[in-house]
Length: 99
Image 1 (spheres, rainbow, N blue to C red):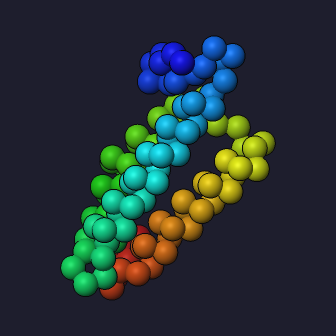
Image 2 (tube, helix red, strand yellow):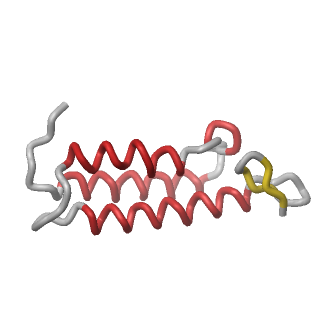
């Protein structure tokens, strides 16, 4: 495997190793946010949204436009599951949502 400009590829020039790495990061960040946004004493929606956009979103989406192709059913399913989990976490907060 090779890593160039933060993107991991294998000898066949496949993005699969990088996709696996990004997927594991997304799971890690989703689990972290589930702990940070607990209903009883968690962050507000606005605070969590800012942290997610500044840190997690930037790290997960780094070079996403280059290596991600939505042709793969597996990738779409995992992305949808991640978005659903984040939506559930955001709906579980007891604060008012400011747009």
